[in-house]
Length: 256
Ligand code: PGA
Image (cartoon, rainbow, N blue to C red):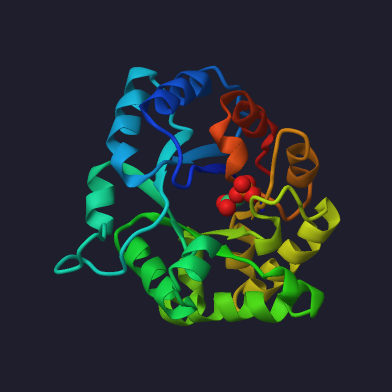
């Protein structure tokens, strides 16, 4: 089965107009392997500017805009929230859903995450569904139970066949922003578990879902991580704010 590889930049609450311009012109010169998509996810206020920079730099069809969050509601009295329709009008194609910072700091539950995934799919956009265990959960050998408990509500909400349009990012919470990365073998083992979990519902769909690894991915470790059979790219935080480093990570991705 051929799967596309995806490298997504999660800028979190960082970046400014200068970084947008620098990144857009750097990406224009970045050589990509076949079957690779690059997604840049700046904060909401910068989405429109990025679309503009993409146009100015005439970035190829391999470059896409993403957002870091979205409301599960269609519209209405939800002060401070942003809807899928608004994001689509800004040319957003991918939406990160259920990032561990949303789950831990903003108390998003797996049920709410499932509703968000549904809203994104209903709008014809692609969710990047984040899942991952904490350090304590890994030590207690609960990784698989935790991942299953994060995936199942989404499967129940949207149905397994809809996963043909879903991207999953496995991000062990203990590896995010800490400089500690899961070893390529450990990451592969967990990705294999995720694919098997999906395959127990539908093997054909499981084979199609791009599984990204996230957590302290950088220019030095990306190659080995991306070389693993079930790792189809990465969700990159800190290193995606450094133009030269992000270019190297993008070039290291290979579709299978
Ligand atoms: P990091 O963040 O690459 O800085 O660890 C990844 C993420 O949180 O998506």
